[in-house]
Image (cartoon, rainbow over all chains, first blue to last red):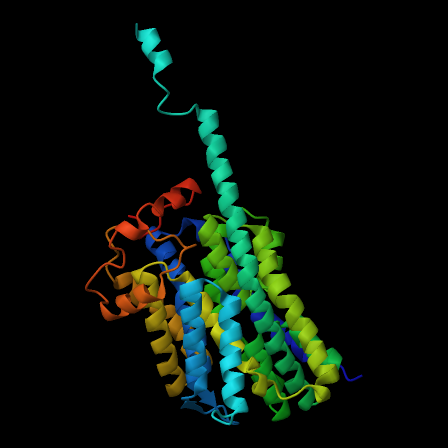
Length: 113
Length: 308
């Protein structure tokens, strides 16, 4: 079995770990001013919304050139978000989102990526 | 006479011990309720991690990765977007240095996650935090930060559930399944599996919206992220959205009184109202949600910026 890329995986892990670890391991975070703590509380909604929006609105071609994407994925994400807000059930929201996309793609009404 | 009065009139306050016990009991109830919510939300994330991991396994197989190589990436890197990018770049014959730099760039957003969780974890042993860091992903952050905010403190069991049970294990199992038996799996896109990740992120973001500032941070974060992604690169867009969204959120005037509890996200109608009336009216108009802020005090949660 080929294992050449295991070393690459190790280097990639080494390039990722500091981002995850430094704020958790460096002392002093507990002495942040109140404004800093308030800022950090807002990071979650901002970055998760950013991830969701970029995933459904930005498409990359083979050269990683970005383009604006409009598709059924928008509807699915909005439906999931609406269900989470209304019923507080992420599982239900995800099932609805995947179901809508699968049905529309199955009917040929939406592109399969 | 005075003694009689003291005996007849019921005490207005319980003895200190009883108050402490009641507070502990209330905190236990909150913790249990929050863990139930965490487990329920985690089921959706398990579906997301499994679907996404399967697609990654399929992509790695198509690029010629062996099961050992694909799994090594999922265990050692454990960051979906950069793993997908690496598959593409390895397939395209890019240099390792380029792949490693790209990985560092794509995963820089984890710094924000770690910084946001760090204030909860300062009293945990450093080796534990070092292990926690390796399994900190988008999903683990989203689930655990919502859980910590609901209970007002860190809950290690909750974190391990969010990081290991809902993400690390399904991701790695699905990677192996994808890379080993991928040929017999129907096209994942037809099943709508590709939508699970963004839908999960959107759903978890909405779960974190407990007031106007969070709402503004989320909307601005999304808009900035898409704009920068189109102008430059999605990885930069996500970081820019994560950095600038909170800045604009903080600049917005906080409500006079925030009674919404993180366990009770803003109902959809109020999200829409807040979008329409952004900056013109407080999210909370009292009445319906009055008293929820007491939950925060009951759980020992420090008042949030909005509470003030």
